[in-house]
Length: 226
Ligand code: DX5
Ligand code: ZN
Image (tube, rainbow, N blue to C red):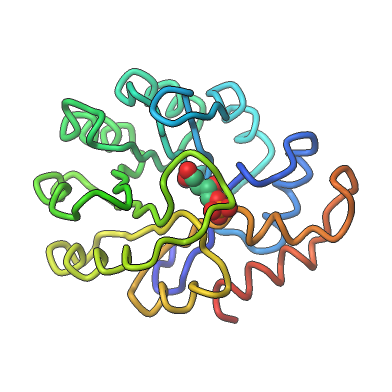
């Protein structure tokens, strides 16, 4: 994967669940680089979303790498389920996991990219001891749990100190990413932009009509700064 250009990861949370396969294929044809899949267990965050069975089926219909963001109280228990289902990138919230270093080692030992997620209220120094076993850090620019929230500015100030400590660390930004802030984030050296509403919200038809590839391509190109 080429990390010198910004990568765009559409978040399936904002896709139409009743025609998910069509949504995935359309966004893939429109130039997406990764698919972001939010796993929520109703405990760590007040919402329920995708399970491993769904991830396994998604894997069968796309060639895009699957970026699985675990918002669950027991990431070490569920990470193997999602890795078996075909996750290529796995991240979890380190505050909730008693042995984050061990879990990152495990994820990497499966040949999967390992990341931790920093909530808007978490200091970047939380990840410093984990840097030797981290491939990426996911910086939340909303409070986790729901799509369509407003971007919390200032979080991007965590990017520079992290890259100073580990220059080859990949930085992913998640929450409220749109044309309004994408270029600023790319200038701050963010490598991957997750975007739910600002891509899937571009639909011009009614909910059950098939989506327009042109709409998605335009949204993705705009985020990338093309
Ligand atoms: C929120 C999720 C995000 C969400 C982003 O907890 O982690 O991935 O889908 O959606 P938007 O881009 O709509 O803020
Ligand atoms: Zn997410």
